[in-house]
Image 1 (spheres, helix red, strand yellow):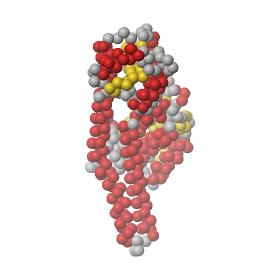
Image 2 (cartoon, helix red, strand yellow):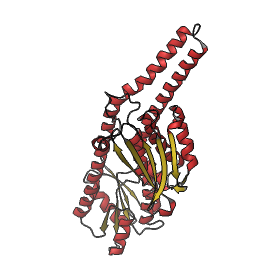
Image 3 (cartoon, rainbow, N blue to C red):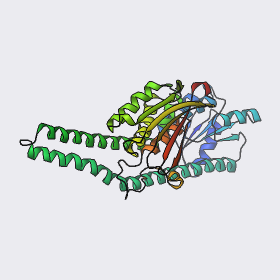
Image 4 (cartoon, rainbow, N blue to C red):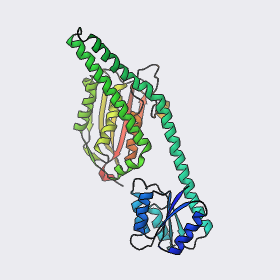
Length: 367
């Protein structure tokens, strides 16, 4: 049963609306003013809100503003009811995020049609989210077992060798075994973190939107790319293959942890999918309203068809290449950039090069 909150200071109109909706098998809660209505909305989290605009205390506009900034209510449909029928007030309500507008004097059919239309749309959104969750679970079930088993096998087998032969192994052999165990543990940790990150992007968009609304600024400069690129290159024992070209110094509208995540995944892919002796290059420049960060490698590359199919748990030519990870790096980076108003573009020629271009806006271009 759908739950509807009615915020209306006119008791007669409130009772009329409640009677019409209850007769249609809706659960209805009513409030006499904006303060009470907002408190009930936060505590009850109704499926739809009907609200007057002019009320004692806070107005319907103010109620709507608070709802749209509340993590658990921001997508709740809101229908305004008001005697303010001129176009200016209608446009004002819609611009502030109202879903519909009923002038006082509406008929029973108009009320029910508006409510049913908004709830049908809500049902479609909920079904789409359920479909996404089911698809996420399906892809996860196919990808997780193999990807987690590989580093776990390395940890288990090397630990067994150490336990069985620690009295006869040389210090050098023990050191190599421990180093390989640590590498497998790091790989397992990265896999789990990417899964957690992907689940967050896939299922908790409102939480991320609240982070975007804070509009944090992160400074991009050559030191950031040198430190991060050097850390990753060292992990692959390929410091000589890292080349950092000209890098603009500027602020970017993204939090430091999110920018670090994007760049880490993309630079790591550059080394992962190229061979020792093949350069991984980093540079950044201003392009109109955005800053572009480019990560280039000379590895095996991707075809246009492969680029179009990039997604979570998607890996290419696994029968020819040993690949680590669940195919989440590009998907996570692309999702993060888009959430923060940026974009990701890939240009590649198989066997020659891959350019990954990340675009993000600077504070100068908030628009």
